[in-house]
Length: 60
Image (cartoon, rainbow, N blue to C red; front, side, top):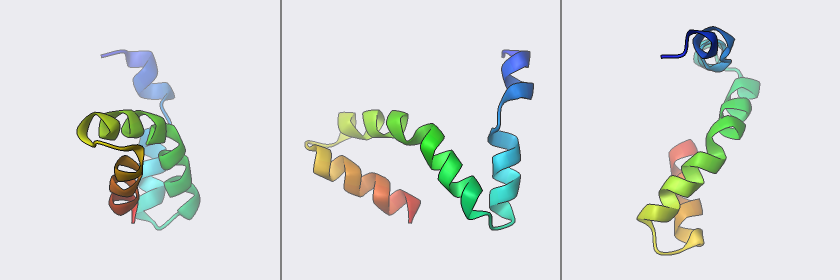
């Protein structure tokens, strides 16, 4: 594990903010992971529309 990444990563702070109901934290986490998540879902689904729907359901 990269120690620098662990301490410079915004995820722990954002997750704590999210637990307290921060919509900003939710938006930022989505921004950080949306591209990778889309790539993963595209591998599972037959179409981009299905992948987008899968992501949207997960984030609702």
